[in-house]
Image 1 (cartoon, rainbow, N blue to C red):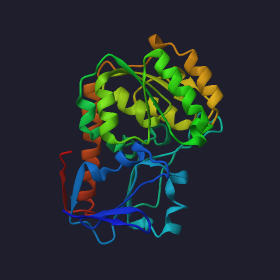
Image 2: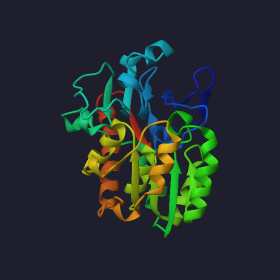
Image 3: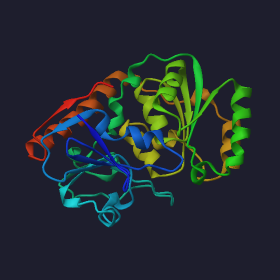
Length: 288
């Protein structure tokens, strides 16, 4: 198998499948590992098949992607979600999208179980590692989320003072995997930081600022009221919240291994559905 990187659109093509996901300028580990290309090798795809996702796309990419040359009707939407910051308590229910097939990671945006699909990064083997005793502060590196970049020094000081390890989500998968292996608790304002922390059986303190965090917790059958609300882009607010964080009120899945198996099976079942619809002839699971 040979992967081809399309420099113009920054998309990767493998075995004739074009994989579309975000490539933020400052990097985002979640946007990388959410693509099913890391976990599946798809065989015999129909001509010009695109797989979009996961990650966040406004309007599920229906308006934006065609302008980038993505043929929606020949594309599959794989666990794409939304992120609405305007005090949304409930997402609008989506019943149809113009993709060849689709499913969203937002459990509260659909009524049919067949349209709900947890992020494909649940299949990453780092989530099978037993936890340590350290605390990992894992933060979004984007200044639109975390605020003034000059606040990083203050966050680093705070982490050292508390004896926490600090990582930003533009780190590599290897660096994050090593940090997760040492950690029993994850404090984060990152969707994937919380997703991976909960799925791997860690205790998680989730600081959330949009609908995607509500959707995340609902997917785990956890009340969104357990989230620590923060304001997007306010470094001062984030620092204040971190000063008062109570680790004893963290979230934890008592059956993380079972949930992890179920989420992985959901992704395998979705791939099988693509075979049934003759969008691909078959697939194999990759070893990472």
